Every structure is written in structure tokens, then in C-alpha cells.
Image 1 (cartoon, rainbow, N blue to C red):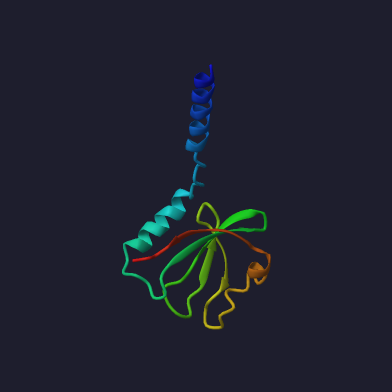
Image 2: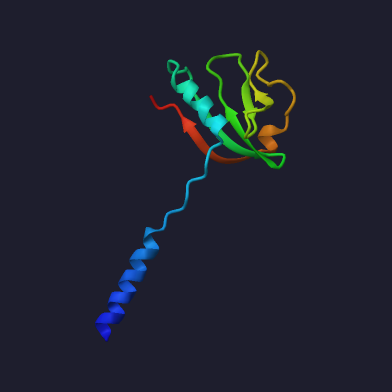
Length: 114
């Protein structure tokens, strides 16, 4: 009887450890933009994509490939929302001046480590 109880508990503990959290999916258009960047020579500074929550929606922030270019915030359908920084002044396009104060960083989606 003890053997059966031990066997049952061992199987149950092993099964519970095999469950893995499903990774959050990245919208296909965001993944396509990442693939497009990967097809280019490595940027300096390296490209990076982060996921934020901003004004109640998921927003994907893409760094730029060079100086004085806007850092772009896109929604899950790759619609342009704003540029919170970058450009000649460094202050972005002025459409989301509160981004860095109000946006909540969710996770790093991708960083070019080539």
C-alpha cells in the first residue's frame, strides 16, 4: 500500500512540474518588422523592441538605427502611435510627451545580439 501511495505522489509531482507557461504571442506584423530588421546589417546602436502598456493598450517600441531618428511606438496592428523620443531635438514628435512617465514596461521582445 505504501508503494502505491509513493508511486502516485511521485507521478503527480512530476506531472505538475512539466507544465510550462505559454509564451505570450507577438503580433504577426511586429514579428514581420523584426524579421525585416534582421535581414539588414546590424544597426548601431543595435535594434531593440520592447512591449509597453500605454493608455490602456499594448504598444511596441522600436529603437532607431541611427542618430536623430524617431523611436517609434506602434500598436499590435503596426499602426503608428507616436515617437516618444528621438529626432533632432531628442524629444520625439510631441504626440506622447508623457510616454516615459505613464507607460509601463512589460517585457523585452527582441534585442539584436548579432
